[in-house]
Length: 379
Image (tube, rainbow, N blue to C red; front, side, top):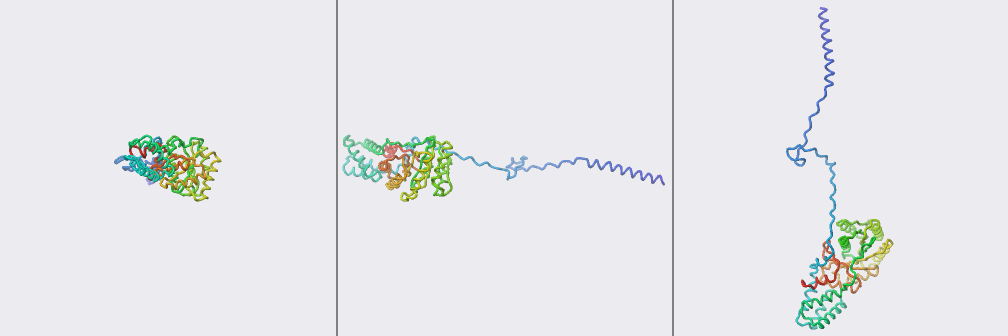
């Protein structure tokens, strides 16, 4: 009996010893890795039926902003000739009316009066008209000309002479830097024209910086910045209501620091009868001149205002030294003779003319090309 009990105890001890050895081995066994999670399959990620790589979280995706598109302005050489069709309204006066009279078999007093009335009606001006007609009558009498083609050539020659082709119409740019002020009355399209002048300069190989000194009109600086951005030019501007003279000064200083050859300053549109605003324009010019001379002051005139534009111009000339005229909206008037009137009465050249709303519809003025567009063979 004692041996039986002893056997049972030994068996129990051996059993416990075996369990003790087994448990540590189970604990040391490596845990098998979790099965890989299948990657989501979508058409966008990599196509149907293909395990596409996992897409990063939306917050991690950063799209680069698109690079701005820099435009290349159309060449200015011959631009007026390319835009000659825009002068069709003026052609109705010069081309059709005048040449119809000159083509008559007999040029009597009534015919010459019709020619005179047509020129005056086209805003050539009374004094200039009489001079043109007197010279045309004399040359016709001396030469005995009756052929319509020859009469057209004589008329064209007189109109070109009235426009004085000897005047310097180039823009004085290319300095370190050259400074151009753009002035004009409200509604003349001054800021838009300023942007187009920048395109003219860049098309001719100049580097340009613009100064948004029209701080009285909220949208002016934004408008100018849009024009500048299209050609990759920089704009200096201040907060709305800032001192225009200060902004103009900063623009010129920035132009000197960056090494551009031209600084183009847009000033606030003014009414010629507002003394305070005109005084402010004078201040802008004086402050800018602390940095260096103003090389050009371009007066923007609306051709559709006719003789009223001349009165506006005279007031501006009393405040600043206007060196050239930019005549806008010439395609929208039948009074193309205003070009002659502006030059004769103001004594300053028309340097640029606007013939449309497109960005490159501002053309350097060429008297011969202008007259040819009015009374040429296509008239």
